[in-house]
Amino acid sequence: MCKTALASLVLYCLLFSVIDPAQAGVVGKVSCDGRSIGFAIDITGPIEDATFDEVREVFTKYHQQQNEIANGGICPEKALKGKPLDFSAYGHRFSIDSTGGSVIAAMKIGRLLRQERESVMVEGVCFSACVFVLAGAVDRAVFAPGKVGIHRPYLVSYTSDARHEIESALRLMRDYLREMDVSPQLADDMIAVEPEDNRVLTASQLASYGLLGVDRAEKQQRAIDQEVRDLEEAKALGLDRREYNRRKSRAKLLCSGPEASPDCRKMILQTGQP
Image (cartoon, rainbow, N blue to C red; front, top):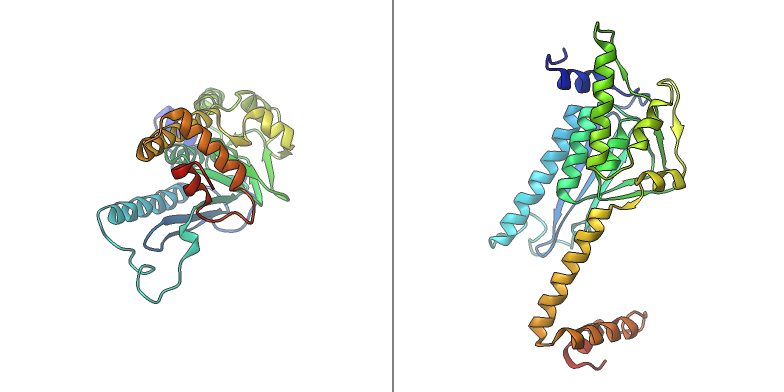
């Protein structure tokens, strides 16, 4: 049963075709080794409201674990003596393999990814509504034989105000893509593809829409984050910025090879010599 408010009605009723018979599923794992915390999230199958709820739950557990460690706690399992290191704790993984589903759920997941500044990998398919999840990520990667495809959204049943509902939905789609700094041309190109068809995008088309690589706003934020880290490190070393930059450049040159000592960078930053 669809909600009565127009915006909700359109987005809850508006679905992309889902041809994958597999049930919607999210496999999520938060890992901790006592010093580092990471997570892995894999979405497979149709995107539904429950999919968003499960993804949000993994992020909630991740932040809870972060807070526990920050307040002096330990990992519930992996920090115990005798347990091997959990290498999945070192980093984040978010992948999706979906032929589509609910647009509103996909947009909610996309906004959650943007809030978390997370990346998405596509190694299978990302069709239809899945594209809105991809748009929300701050870094998007499509690995062969992965494919991204688009087509026009449709209402699952006829209503007396169908034309107005579809037009409103398309406006919401464009607004979302602008919010994510993705070309609104993507919405126009979706509309041009019949719902029973699926247009697979090339790498150059993905790049032109802004669906490959790091989002522009994220690039700026990463540069700011790096600048803050550099300033803090220079201050801790008692170096002015010019000398810090000189030593950092020297460390990049001398400490990048396979034979470089693990302490090479640290030594050069501290003393100026390898």
